[in-house]
Amino acid sequence: MAFSELLDRVGSRGRFQVLQMVALVVPITWLAPQNVLENFSAAAPSHRCWVPLLDNSTAQASVPRALDPQALLAVSIPPGPSRGPHQCRRFRHPQWQLLDPNATATNWSEADTEPCVDSWWDLVCDAQALRPMAQSIYLAGNPVGAAVCSQVSDRFGRRRVLTWIHLQVAVAATAAAFTPTFSMYCLFRFLAAFTVVGTTLNTFILLAEWTSAQAHVLVVTLNSLGYTFGRVLLAAVAYGVLQQLAVSVPCFLCFVYSWWLAESARWLLITGRLERGLRELQKVATISGKRAVGDALTVEVLRSAKQEELSFALGFTFYGLILDLQALGSNIFLLQALIVVADIPPKVGTLLLLDHLGRRPTQAVILVLAGLCILANAMVPRGLPHCAQVRPTEAGLPGWEGAVGVASPGALCQMATQAGAILGPLVRLLRIYGDSLPLLVCGVVPVRSGLAALLVLPETQNLTLPNTIQ
Image (spheres, rainbow, N blue to C red):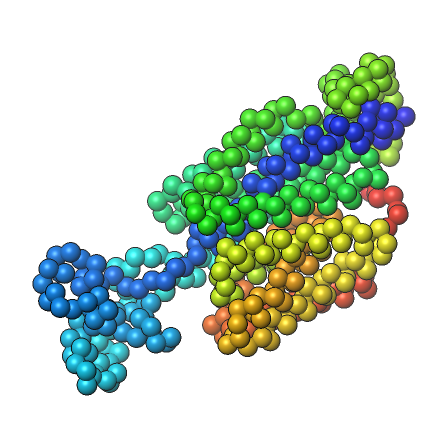
């Protein structure tokens, strides 16, 4: 008797699978925001240089009371490119002559200005490249996590590794909220990212190994919706609270209840832990209302199933855009919510397309459409209203997530996806050569990938997936 038959007997689509889905997707909703958290925690608000006349109480005492803050700002900060106060330069000395109604812009020169020597903000002006660098360092933790967690879970078990991962992300992400230096912040964010992809892998494996093969596509789709709901949650909590803590502290609760999750019986059988595998299968049978079937199981039945088992035995474009919502010029809280709400129909639609078109055409169509939407956004003039700029991107990002859902969630695919994701934030540095250049690059990549998928990928619809090392 193969393990799949054994699982069908104790219940492969029953009450246990529903409870397990809920227990595993809840942590996903709290981990998903970690990937896009810096849209809010590293967002650059309106800023200017620190100047004594406005920000030093001692210097303010010597200023005539007749001068209002706007006048003091005019003599302290030069005008910037957008005609407002310059964000990154200040006058070396107050330019009192500018208060003269007959004064003109020629009453001062560039030599009268200097950079923000004691700026209030750390990730702006000359240090603005540190933000995409921090995001790439974070994303570098994902492929490392994919490589390590996949090996460790094969050796020590899916549930045990998942429990450890919940603790690590809770500690690392919470510590990142209190770290006093940029380098320590990057270190803790790297450690948090290490666990995000590990959670993805182990969650999928536990869901797949406790579910019948016919329900795998449904399980993967429902699991991916956990990421969608998580980013909706982020848009809500980031609006009014300390978002780094809000999405990190609940992971401690996930760590506590993960001790009661069932270990993969398939893994227990393959590794020779037959007694424990028997207990897990009997527990599943009891929860699914098939206790008599579970009581009838014996170690000999599992040993037979073990022998049968042994004999048979995408990221650059998405993260380049999703981590730079502020550049779209809209309300980033509303935009975050709109994008993830628009993410639901493509994921549900992908489930239907997989059943009717197959994986290869679905992957190609989604990639090409996502790329075309992004390219369309690059062509929209910046002077148009925000809604005209945002709409193509809202269509492109959810489409890209649908393509990621079609791809295999295996460790190798996760490593390739995250390797591309590391480069995603760095593409934004191309903006110094042209505002639309990052969008053009992010749009061309999925179009070419979609065409390549149509030409070279094998079709796997209705085929038994290989399950051997060969």
